[in-house]
Image (tube, rainbow, N blue to C red; front, side):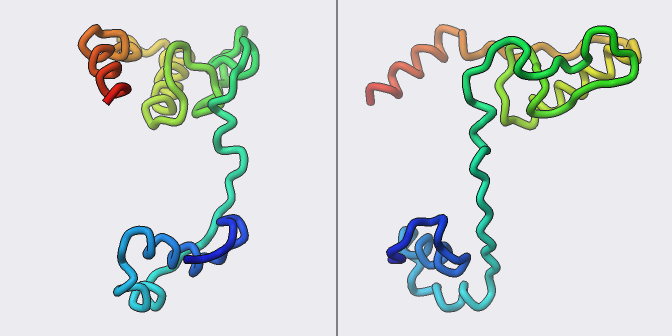
Amino acid sequence: HVNKKMEDCTGEEILAELCHHLGYTDRLEELRETATCIPCMMPFITSQFMPRTPGDRPEVVPAGSNNLAFLGQFAEVPDDVVFTVEYSVRSALMAVHELFDAEGDVPPVSTHQYEPDVLLDTVRAAFR
């Protein structure tokens, strides 16, 4: 295997390491010739999961705004979990409903994680 930290590897070296772990060494040469692997460092990708306090993220539609909204992962969507497509879509729906008085409601955030059977399955999985 490649004897380097991943951040120091070329794309080809990352591909070779992956092939060794997955047992695809017999196809490594073919993959080297036909695949493109471009390393991309994203050192702050987990920043969305850091503890935060009210005000760290802007409200989707700030108080007093009638033509500005913040959309996506860094706007505050109450009770939802960041890093999902649903979060981004929900922020857009919230903005449209508030700024344009759209009919209907924004679909509620799922609370399935609080259902007893889901909690029980979680405990079982944790102690497997």
